[in-house]
Length: 520
Picture 1 (cartoon, rainbow, N blue to C red):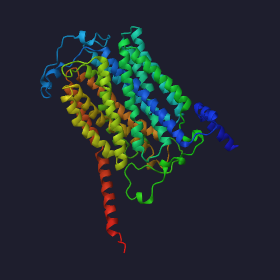
Picture 2 (cartoon, helix red, strand yellow):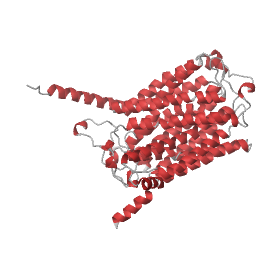
Picture 3 (cartoon, rainbow, N blue to C red):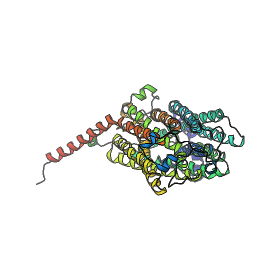
Picture 4 (cartoon, rainbow, N blue to C red):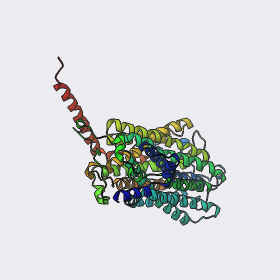
């Protein structure tokens, strides 16, 4: 009776779409096929989350188009701080009339308030989403989150046709959108972590994490293309896209191997560690025999070695990344490049180069961290390299379009590389840390803590930018460079530990070679 009950339970948890595919093909899907489905569905799901998130930054250029940064026509880094705030004539004939209440002198501040409201609810909701994700069916949870995100993204756009000019309408809609958006990240990382082991996790998740940049690019291109028909379309169409994908996810996503009657041991990436590989374990080594258990508590998750340093590192890393996410199209459209201002659509399209660089950075960071088996060294190195990249982009990005593109690609690579690494491979490593003794019901909670803490920084960055940019964009970039430095410094202890491990391993190899008996 027990086996019959278990078989019935598995059949009920198996997605309807998977059952339909197996019924039509008259054969069971293999473990590898399920892994492929998981990667594709979660990739598209989170890409759609980011696509709807990115649309706001594109719409900003239409809501408040009248504050050009003419300082760059005669740019000097040191003189920018001493120069009085630029008192420009309203160039509506170049940039458009905007949308009340965002087209006034306090437009950037109001837009910054929308960002921080969204991200504050998003980061707060992330902690609860991780807690709930470890206790509920993630397929249902993600579906609700995606449909809800689509609804409130579309409602923001409805304000265009309804001629709504009440700031609090857009504020409340953004906050509710942020709440539903918070369901996404802990859930997709937990699902992928259920299907893939640690071997090559950095590279696999680095490639998979391209969904962030692909979503940003898709959101930018779709929203930019629709601006000419009215900015409302730039919100409604992406909202419909994520809602439809949410239904596809409900039909096809297997949350774990057990849901479809498979054994996780079939995954070749879960081969046990060899005896001679345990001489000096890296700090984040997590490969242990996995078991089901009760979901861990919030405080217990914080105590996992490495969680706090990476969480605070991500706080400052996402502060930089999300400032670009929400303000880059606005910055480009208000900055003279080679003495000319780009249209809103052109600025949105150009901003995608940052995310193209982010794709390269995420894959590169994952690959390097796998080869070195050193997550902290890789993340810290990328953050330190982001500092000169930010300086050069601000200082020389206005010279020509080609220079702007090249510097934007490099900046995106170094800014998004560690962000992608920490939110994917590192979170999955820590969620299966050896201190958990194989309890795999911690992935969503750990992921939520790390990304939730990072999202607080993501809220603060755009908020500060809304205020600081009204006086000086140079001050904004200075803030970003300081944040990148602090982000790397938070990993200092882990970097020292990883360097010590590498030195120990190297000494061990040298000792074994020196004591080896030569063959006669």
